[in-house]
Image (cartoon, rainbow, N blue to C red; front, side, top):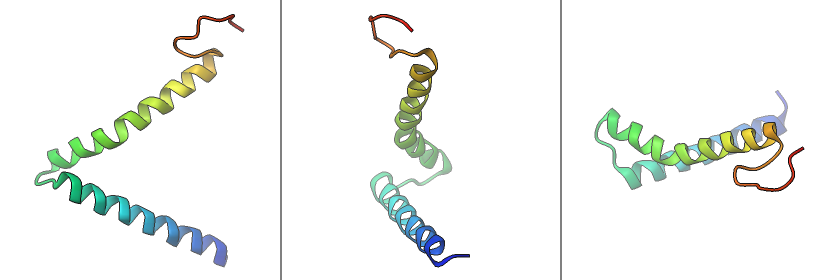
Length: 70
């Protein structure tokens, strides 16, 4: 494995650990349900925006775009 690839993986792991630590500090989950709620709060809006972008691209126009359709 190349040194550059290993460095990228290590950097990504460091970022992931920092994010996980911030989630634990902010939400302080006590149960698996608490952790699931935290994950939904954090990733839900991101996945929603990603899906909306996919639909906009697929349809060729934005959700509230009233202009000319392709």
